[in-house]
Length: 130
Image 1 (cartoon, rainbow, N blue to C red):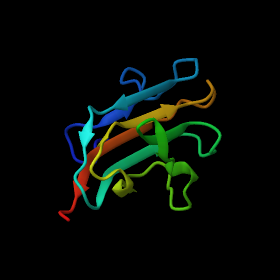
Image 2: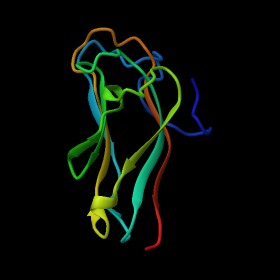
Image 3: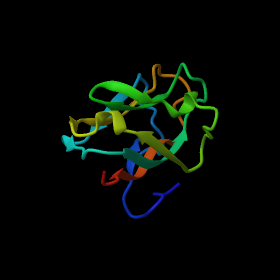
């Protein structure tokens, strides 16, 4: 698959092989610089394509704020594997603070990692004026 909005996408995978299998467990993350949130309703919005094992125990993609997990899409009833899907995280409880956002992927093991992996696109932090 390609980016949701070409040309760029964040991909937890290997361009040489087209998957995320390197024979070992993979645990990687991509963090933002500090983000100062305004006072008021704020949310993180992004598109996710996750072509991995569907078990909640393996191939875990999480969104973290200040080191704490705030979303693991595969544990949601609305999660759909191997297709682009929009996700929103309410950041209102962090209003008027500076946060660190991180997208993290952990394969947990070295088994069944020959699929595309995880792609993230169109990342936005959106707020409303109080």
